Image (cartoon, rainbow, N blue to C red; front, side, top):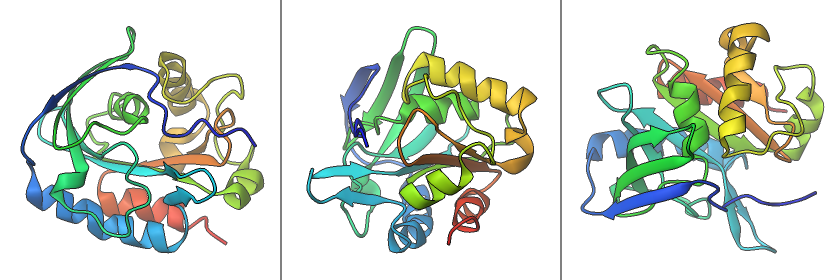
Length: 200
């Protein structure tokens, strides 16, 4: 298995600042907990690298609150552990965010899913070797040549949504991102439940 989780593959313009959207951060933590307990968000202990992230749309189409980079090891989070993505230029690989921490390395992938439709209100990205292997090619699956966190992944998710059942399933397997799966929903509950429901 090749681990490239946690490495930001876009240009990040982070404006450090105070925590915002406190209530939304609490809701994110509420739905993050069962994902932690299921081992779908966490940390590779031998590598010290966190994996998995969660986000929720805030107001306009372009704004969303996402877990900060390298927060996977935390058992509990609060508003200090989330970043507000204020703009995402997918074509040029640029993400602008603000808050106490820099946005997750998966921020561009989350932005690409929010761009698929205004009804999408939350996105969850998890890791599970078992779920990944079991659902590869069965659930909507990205091209294995496409790396996560890149403009290419944004285009690939758009293809899956339009042509390969991602819109209906709400969950996709990231073939080029070992162990990675991603889900969306109109609410955090739906996004988290969709990926938890395919669990062992």
